[in-house]
Length: 457
Picture 1 (tube, one colour):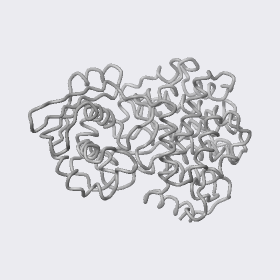
Picture 2 (cartoon, rainbow, N blue to C red):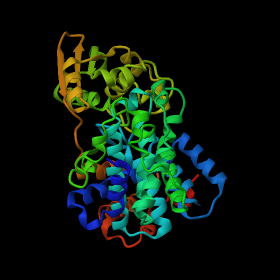
Picture 3 (cartoon, one colour):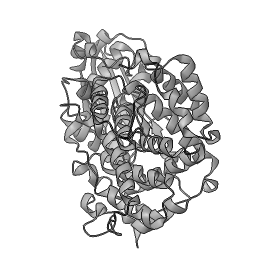
Picture 4 (cartoon, rainbow, N blue to C red):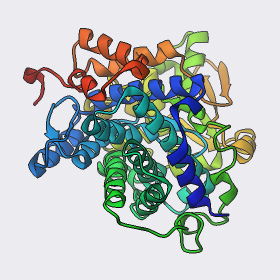
């Protein structure tokens, strides 16, 4: 089967009227969520480095960098905003593939949508086709992709961003195919960062994906072509990154089973495999009264994949990146601070002796029941046991990540967005985001995503 062509045809031909109401609402919510993450993330040191880089590049003033208000090229704006969106482990996530689409797709759509004066409905449609193409490509190479050290967002994100950009440019099937093909060659992002917990490199993977996708579509629009079998070919994307490529996943349920509906949002500012551990610990703390100093030991069980590749690797984090990928540190942080969000993961927490000492009492292991479920459907579950010095023991099992309600997402957006913008501006964004389908010109959203001049640098 010509899978690349089939996906390109779907992306080029899908109309807004084809979208179920639930899919439209999900796309609007993902966009709102992504903007909150971008605004808070824009204030972090590595994000400021990306901003300074983009500012130094100059470029045709086509699109806006959120918070800072800088006008630059669509490619550069997508890079900056994508970096902001992936800067602090607060992304949306597709659990089965590990793809964080919001930091790749939303910045690309905003950058090009602002340039093209796209409508809110065009914005939504571009997001949906991007998520459907991107996630199916991820499913076709899971779990081999990560087994080969490839980071899912950096690897698959460019294809989503290219598809979204092509949709906004109204590409026909042929040009859309070439945009996807070119984007596949832009695949990047390695798990050595963050697995080692060294350096800030992982923070820019979203920006790399967003900007690469926009660039790929622009090149295809200018006539650059790529192989028509770039996904399924013997030397194509799926065979390069999948041991036994599940090519059928590329089109299974296309147009009827909407993968975007399986996207969830991170509750805590930490790696996705640590999230259910923290959720289990939160339940235990709400049901039983004890202090951190009463704890003798905490054992956190998960799948082998999660344990060997993420949660059991980093025991003594040296910076915030490694802290957010360290299960024992993150659980200790939650126990001591009562939270594990943007406000709790700080440089001060890294050297807090209470967190460090408690972290040494927390151990991860492979839970066989969780592992069996992982082998079936790839849920991100965890089992946590807390043993106190009194001898009392409490256990909680989270079979899969909790879904956030619409109001949960609104509140998360408010907490994050107000790091950079005012409360009134924040509420206007919530209203416009939730009613994105009624927006006549996406560029009208942009002023709401920029802080006042006194807050920019």
